[in-house]
Image (tube, rainbow, N blue to C red; front, top):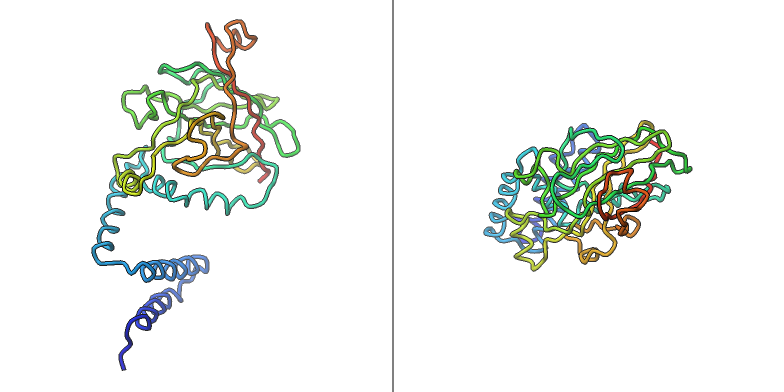
Length: 290
């Protein structure tokens, strides 16, 4: 006697799940079997048409084709805009430790950017001059010496170096180390809000669903130090208009800073080489012990 409708669909799902039963890696077995169940449940719930299934295949194919292996990572962008990146972040940082909040890594990180000295300017394109400084500390409040802060941000045109071939190599990117007292200082320009790339499948998805592509202004950090967990986070401009509607859901209240106006005669002007007015932002990062 043949099965019909839902009964046949459920039998197919269980048959596929069973094919993974002999997976020797227990975690991989859990991931694959759960993926099949949830994916099949989605297809059944929305009663996916063949045309929609093919459109999804084409969408994923084009997403992969947009990735260049260096700067553009469309799959991270897709994960970000669907809130998956921040959900993974939340799951992996469920318990308060006293460390600085994490947020999304983003798709535009480049390894091996120049090492820069305390207070060195990493901005080779115009913008509002700024100094971002503070300390890196343990959860007990002790300074973390020689911590490495890998930093990156967009230029005023809303694009990152590497993404924008007109920008000099290493523009608005750099690796800074803390001194013996855990202090760091980064001379840069005030970050600006910008749209994520919309020239690929993720951009078409946002347009089709009536969503805007804008991210609030921010400075990226990846901070590492021996004996401590790696911290991936942002510092957001506190008064940015897109804080409440970030296209990738990455904003957390604890990661917002003010870029305060400072005059040419300010105490920091001479130390960091500012000839006119500039902005100053201060923030202390706290690392969790590994």
